[in-house]
Amino acid sequence: MREPVELRRQRILAAVESRGAVKVSVLATELEVSVVTVRRDVEELTRAGRLRRAHGVARAVRPVETAVTAPAARRSEQPAEGGAVALVVPERHSYLYEAAYGARPVLEEAGFRVALHVAPQAPGAERPLVERALADGARGLLIAPRWRGADTEEADHGWLAGVGVPTVLMERRPRPGSALHALDMVCSDHWYGVHLAVDHLIGLGHRRIVLAARDDSPTARSIRAAFTEIAAARPEVADWSVALSSPDAVPAPVPGSPGAEAPPRDRTPLDLAGLLRERGATAALLHGDVDALMLVQSLAEQGVRVPQDCSVVAYDDVLAALGSTPLTAVAPPKAEVGRAAAELLVHRLSRPGGAAGPVRRIELLPELKVRGSTARPADAPAHGPADPPPPGAGAVRVPAPIPVQK
Image (cartoon, rainbow, N blue to C red; front, side, top):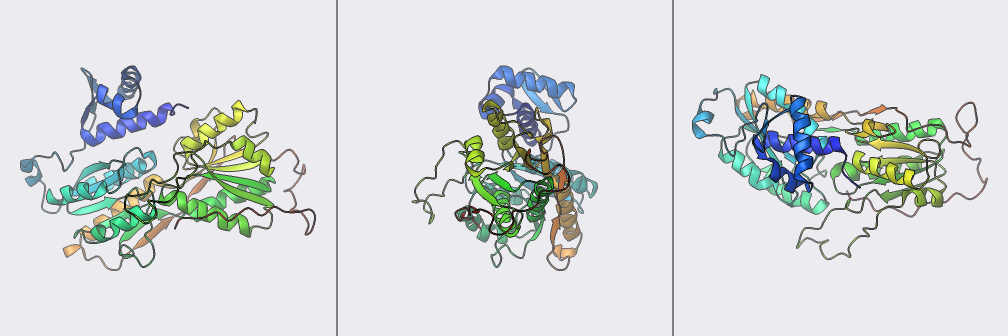
């Protein structure tokens, strides 16, 4: 299925803003769409005042001068109390682009120039970008490493702990006791976000719930672990299960890592309608928005109506409201994470040598945005929430243990 238009345009904006100007033909190759499609997107973004277009090139309205290309003479003009801050986010990650947008005004107001670096999807892509930024004089670092698996996270621990400038992690919670445990961080409380979703569905009377989630990022693994814990602990939930939301939702092992020789995981597209029938489920929590929208489309093609036959809650709320049926969604405070991380970094940089007191770990709570994709199940009582099944009233299927990657 095709990528939603709004997500593709966000990716175009991110690419252009990170580089200043990009040829339309290059964007078409990177996005794997036609030049005509990109040209149409660029024209729409230009009409909205978000880009400038000229002779087959898309230009940023307000270019971000990257540390890779900034002339040395221009860098020397920065005030002593300012300078550059490197902001490193993964390629094709609209969720973290919102965090970057939240960080930017805080840094600029404090007198810092933002040096935005977009890391490719290859393992270890962040390190050379950070090293280049430091060589060009970056005084601080805001970073959200991709960390598709535990092995890629471990590979980053040593060098990232020793970058030598104040560093704040965004939406990343390092393993307790690791070399990065003592870094400042700002992230969303994804346990609470899953709690909001499950509690909302239970309150509507749903008793059998499926999680279709990714497994290729720290956020995805947090959501899977939280759902497993919460669903197992709630007596109202009669049955629950976890499935991969997309065939490409798993991390590729790093060559030479302990898991590199493991058998490949099943990449068969998820038959969500079949899983709902198999489990007798009336509700699903889907991560993230693109996978959620595509799975809802797949349900419609198989005659499953949302929310009449199945209630759906999406997790991320980047594009959830744009569906043909706007999706109820858990909305992590993405821009606020970026703002809080930037404020924390500015606080450190304002102290001699970056010594701003103890390490700070900040968690922000998500919200639940209720829209048109959730409703009471057809068999729920007309008034009040459905009661949980009495003890011993029929067999309750216990799902097989779900391996959760820490």
